[in-house]
Amino acid sequence: MKVALVGRDLFEVEPLLSRFDLELDNDSPEVVISHGGDGTLLGAEREYPSIPKVALRSSKVCKKCENHKNEVVLAHLAAGELVETPLLKLQAVKGDQWLTGLNDIIFRNEIPTSAVRFEVDIDGRNHSGGIIADGLVVATSFGSSGYYRSITHSIFQVGIGLAFNNSTEGVDHLVLREESEITVTVERGPGVVYADNGPDFFRLEKGDTFEVRKAAEPARILGIDTLRCTHCERIPNIRRPYDVDRRVKFPAVE
Image (cartoon, rainbow, N blue to C red; front, side, top):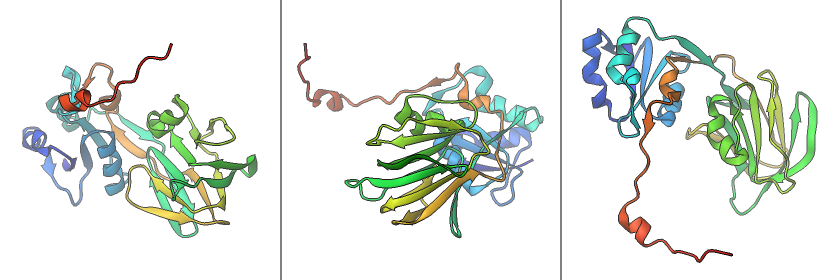
Protein backbone atom coordinates (compact mmCIF):
# COMPACT_ATOMS: atom_id res chain seq x y z
CA MET A 1 0.00 0.00 0.00
CA LYS A 2 1.30 3.48 -0.91
CA VAL A 3 1.05 6.06 1.86
CA ALA A 4 1.88 9.73 2.28
CA LEU A 5 3.15 11.19 5.55
CA VAL A 6 2.03 14.63 6.69
CA GLY A 7 2.83 16.40 9.94
CA ARG A 8 5.57 16.77 12.47
CA ASP A 9 7.99 14.38 14.19
CA LEU A 10 7.66 11.99 11.25
CA PHE A 11 10.72 10.12 12.54
CA GLU A 12 8.26 8.43 14.92
CA VAL A 13 6.36 6.91 11.98
CA GLU A 14 8.55 6.57 8.89
CA PRO A 15 10.85 3.80 10.24
CA LEU A 16 7.75 1.66 10.94
CA LEU A 17 6.42 1.67 7.37
CA SER A 18 8.65 -1.07 5.98
CA ARG A 19 7.71 -3.36 8.87
CA PHE A 20 4.14 -3.42 7.57
CA ASP A 21 4.90 -3.34 3.82
CA LEU A 22 3.75 0.27 3.53
CA GLU A 23 5.50 2.24 0.79
CA LEU A 24 6.15 5.95 1.24
CA ASP A 25 4.74 7.83 -1.77
CA ASN A 26 3.82 11.48 -1.21
CA ASP A 27 2.89 11.99 -4.87
CA SER A 28 0.19 9.35 -5.45
CA PRO A 29 -0.78 7.80 -2.11
CA GLU A 30 -3.68 5.43 -1.50
CA VAL A 31 -3.82 6.53 2.15
CA VAL A 32 -2.51 9.62 3.94
CA ILE A 33 -1.10 9.28 7.45
CA SER A 34 -1.48 12.47 9.48
CA HIS A 35 0.88 12.67 12.46
CA GLY A 36 0.36 15.42 15.02
CA GLY A 37 -2.94 16.84 16.22
CA ASP A 38 -6.30 17.94 14.85
CA GLY A 39 -4.70 20.85 12.99
CA THR A 40 -2.37 18.47 11.18
CA LEU A 41 -5.35 16.43 10.00
CA LEU A 42 -7.04 19.59 8.66
CA GLY A 43 -3.91 20.43 6.69
CA ALA A 44 -3.66 16.88 5.35
CA GLU A 45 -7.25 17.06 4.10
CA ARG A 46 -6.51 20.33 2.29
CA GLU A 47 -3.40 18.85 0.67
CA TYR A 48 -4.94 15.47 -0.20
CA PRO A 49 -8.73 15.95 -0.38
CA SER A 50 -10.93 12.83 -0.59
CA ILE A 51 -8.02 10.41 -0.03
CA PRO A 52 -8.52 8.24 3.10
CA LYS A 53 -6.70 9.53 6.18
CA VAL A 54 -5.30 7.84 9.27
CA ALA A 55 -4.74 10.28 12.12
CA LEU A 56 -1.93 9.42 14.54
CA ARG A 57 -1.25 11.56 17.59
CA SER A 58 2.27 12.79 18.16
CA SER A 59 3.91 11.56 21.35
CA LYS A 60 4.45 15.23 22.27
CA VAL A 61 0.72 15.91 22.56
CA CYS A 62 -0.66 12.52 23.57
CA LYS A 63 0.28 9.51 25.68
CA LYS A 64 -1.41 6.78 23.66
CA CYS A 65 -3.22 3.77 25.01
CA GLU A 66 -2.18 0.27 23.92
CA ASN A 67 -4.77 0.18 21.10
CA HIS A 68 -3.56 3.39 19.49
CA LYS A 69 0.19 3.11 19.52
CA ASN A 70 1.62 3.81 16.07
CA GLU A 71 2.69 0.24 15.35
CA VAL A 72 -0.72 -1.13 16.36
CA VAL A 73 -2.67 1.28 14.13
CA LEU A 74 -0.30 0.73 11.19
CA ALA A 75 -0.69 -3.05 11.55
CA HIS A 76 -4.48 -2.66 11.32
CA LEU A 77 -4.06 -0.35 8.32
CA ALA A 78 -1.88 -2.85 6.46
CA ALA A 79 -4.38 -5.63 7.22
CA GLY A 80 -7.30 -3.57 5.93
CA GLU A 81 -8.96 -3.62 9.35
CA LEU A 82 -9.54 0.11 9.91
CA VAL A 83 -13.17 1.13 9.45
CA GLU A 84 -13.75 4.14 7.19
CA THR A 85 -15.94 6.96 8.52
CA PRO A 86 -17.12 9.77 6.22
CA LEU A 87 -17.06 13.24 7.79
CA LEU A 88 -19.09 16.16 6.53
CA LYS A 89 -17.16 19.04 4.95
CA LEU A 90 -18.45 22.56 4.32
CA GLN A 91 -17.92 24.80 1.31
CA ALA A 92 -18.04 28.60 1.30
CA VAL A 93 -18.69 30.18 -2.11
CA LYS A 94 -18.45 33.80 -3.24
CA GLY A 95 -18.84 34.10 -7.02
CA ASP A 96 -15.98 32.08 -8.50
CA GLN A 97 -14.10 31.90 -5.19
CA TRP A 98 -14.54 28.97 -2.83
CA LEU A 99 -13.07 27.45 0.31
CA THR A 100 -13.64 24.02 1.84
CA GLY A 101 -13.38 23.14 5.52
CA LEU A 102 -13.58 19.99 7.63
CA ASN A 103 -13.96 21.87 10.93
CA ASP A 104 -15.61 25.17 10.10
CA ILE A 105 -16.11 28.18 7.88
CA ILE A 106 -15.25 31.40 9.70
CA PHE A 107 -16.57 34.85 8.73
CA ARG A 108 -15.19 37.70 10.79
CA ASN A 109 -14.37 41.39 10.88
CA GLU A 110 -11.19 42.25 9.01
CA ILE A 111 -10.59 45.25 11.28
CA PRO A 112 -10.51 43.98 14.90
CA THR A 113 -11.77 47.30 16.33
CA SER A 114 -14.84 47.42 14.08
CA ALA A 115 -17.71 44.92 14.07
CA VAL A 116 -19.39 43.71 10.89
CA ARG A 117 -23.12 44.07 10.21
CA PHE A 118 -24.73 41.26 8.25
CA GLU A 119 -27.88 39.28 7.59
CA VAL A 120 -28.22 35.49 7.53
CA ASP A 121 -30.70 33.59 5.37
CA ILE A 122 -31.26 29.89 6.11
CA ASP A 123 -32.75 27.94 3.22
CA GLY A 124 -34.04 31.21 1.76
CA ARG A 125 -35.60 32.53 4.98
CA ASN A 126 -34.14 35.46 6.89
CA HIS A 127 -32.92 34.83 10.43
CA SER A 128 -33.08 37.64 13.04
CA GLY A 129 -32.67 40.56 10.61
CA GLY A 130 -29.48 42.63 10.77
CA ILE A 131 -26.81 41.30 13.12
CA ILE A 132 -23.86 43.28 14.51
CA ALA A 133 -21.03 41.02 15.66
CA ASP A 134 -17.40 40.10 15.26
CA GLY A 135 -18.58 37.43 12.83
CA LEU A 136 -20.07 34.01 12.37
CA VAL A 137 -18.78 30.45 12.69
CA VAL A 138 -20.42 27.68 10.63
CA ALA A 139 -19.22 24.35 12.01
CA THR A 140 -19.50 20.63 11.32
CA SER A 141 -20.15 18.25 14.21
CA PHE A 142 -16.50 17.18 13.98
CA GLY A 143 -15.39 20.81 14.28
CA SER A 144 -17.91 21.72 16.97
CA SER A 145 -15.33 21.02 19.69
CA GLY A 146 -13.18 23.91 18.38
CA TYR A 147 -14.06 27.57 17.75
CA TYR A 148 -17.81 26.80 17.86
CA ARG A 149 -17.47 25.39 21.38
CA SER A 150 -15.45 28.38 22.59
CA ILE A 151 -18.34 30.67 21.60
CA THR A 152 -21.33 28.53 22.56
CA HIS A 153 -19.88 26.33 25.34
CA SER A 154 -21.54 23.39 23.60
CA ILE A 155 -20.95 20.75 20.96
CA PHE A 156 -23.32 18.74 18.77
CA GLN A 157 -23.29 15.34 17.08
CA VAL A 158 -25.32 15.80 13.86
CA GLY A 159 -25.91 18.69 11.46
CA ILE A 160 -24.38 22.13 10.88
CA GLY A 161 -23.88 24.60 13.72
CA LEU A 162 -24.10 28.42 13.55
CA ALA A 163 -22.38 30.43 16.26
CA PHE A 164 -22.64 34.21 16.30
CA ASN A 165 -19.35 35.61 17.56
CA ASN A 166 -19.78 38.39 20.13
CA SER A 167 -23.14 39.58 18.80
CA THR A 168 -24.53 42.78 20.29
CA GLU A 169 -28.05 41.37 20.01
CA GLY A 170 -27.26 38.15 21.85
CA VAL A 171 -28.43 35.96 18.97
CA ASP A 172 -28.47 32.33 20.10
CA HIS A 173 -26.57 29.60 18.28
CA LEU A 174 -28.36 27.13 16.01
CA VAL A 175 -27.93 23.55 14.82
CA LEU A 176 -29.32 22.95 11.32
CA ARG A 177 -29.80 20.00 8.99
CA GLU A 178 -26.72 18.95 7.00
CA GLU A 179 -28.57 19.87 3.80
CA SER A 180 -29.25 23.44 4.94
CA GLU A 181 -27.86 26.32 2.87
CA ILE A 182 -26.72 29.48 4.62
CA THR A 183 -26.43 32.82 2.80
CA VAL A 184 -24.66 35.75 4.44
CA THR A 185 -25.13 39.30 3.14
CA VAL A 186 -22.73 41.97 4.37
CA GLU A 187 -24.34 45.29 5.29
CA ARG A 188 -21.14 46.77 6.70
CA GLY A 189 -17.64 45.45 6.25
CA PRO A 190 -14.92 44.80 5.65
CA GLY A 191 -14.98 41.12 6.46
CA VAL A 192 -12.96 38.01 5.63
CA VAL A 193 -13.86 34.33 5.25
CA TYR A 194 -11.54 31.47 6.16
CA ALA A 195 -11.86 27.68 6.22
CA ASP A 196 -10.37 25.68 9.11
CA ASN A 197 -6.80 26.76 9.88
CA GLY A 198 -5.96 27.36 6.21
CA PRO A 199 -4.03 30.38 4.94
CA ASP A 200 -6.42 31.20 2.07
CA PHE A 201 -9.35 33.60 2.43
CA PHE A 202 -11.59 35.97 0.52
CA ARG A 203 -12.65 39.52 1.43
CA LEU A 204 -16.14 40.94 1.69
CA GLU A 205 -17.37 44.51 1.43
CA LYS A 206 -20.80 46.11 1.83
CA GLY A 207 -23.32 44.38 -0.44
CA ASP A 208 -21.26 41.21 -0.93
CA THR A 209 -22.78 37.80 -0.24
CA PHE A 210 -21.40 34.32 0.24
CA GLU A 211 -23.01 30.93 0.75
CA VAL A 212 -22.11 27.99 2.96
CA ARG A 213 -23.35 24.52 2.13
CA LYS A 214 -22.48 20.85 2.44
CA ALA A 215 -19.47 20.00 0.26
CA ALA A 216 -19.95 17.44 -2.50
CA GLU A 217 -17.43 14.98 -1.04
CA PRO A 218 -16.78 14.11 2.62
CA ALA A 219 -13.47 13.55 4.32
CA ARG A 220 -12.68 9.85 4.65
CA ILE A 221 -11.19 8.92 8.02
CA LEU A 222 -9.85 5.45 8.80
CA GLY A 223 -10.00 4.35 12.43
CA ILE A 224 -11.57 7.57 13.70
CA ASP A 225 -11.32 6.36 17.31
CA THR A 226 -7.63 7.33 17.26
CA LEU A 227 -8.84 10.96 17.45
CA ARG A 228 -11.43 10.67 20.21
CA CYS A 229 -10.18 7.88 22.47
CA THR A 230 -10.87 8.59 26.14
CA HIS A 231 -8.06 6.26 27.21
CA CYS A 232 -5.35 8.20 25.37
CA GLU A 233 -4.05 10.95 27.65
CA ARG A 234 -3.54 14.43 26.26
CA ILE A 235 -0.28 15.92 27.52
CA PRO A 236 -1.06 19.37 29.00
CA ASN A 237 1.01 22.44 28.22
CA ILE A 238 3.43 22.99 31.10
CA ARG A 239 4.15 26.60 31.97
CA ARG A 240 7.72 27.60 32.63
CA PRO A 241 8.33 28.82 36.22
CA TYR A 242 8.66 32.49 35.27
CA ASP A 243 5.26 32.40 33.51
CA VAL A 244 3.68 31.68 36.87
CA ASP A 245 6.01 33.74 39.07
CA ARG A 246 5.50 36.95 37.08
CA ARG A 247 1.73 36.69 36.89
CA VAL A 248 -0.11 39.55 38.62
CA LYS A 249 -2.31 38.29 41.43
CA PHE A 250 -5.50 40.18 42.22
CA PRO A 251 -7.23 40.03 45.60
CA ALA A 252 -10.38 37.94 45.85
CA VAL A 253 -13.64 39.84 45.65
CA GLU A 254 -15.93 39.12 48.60
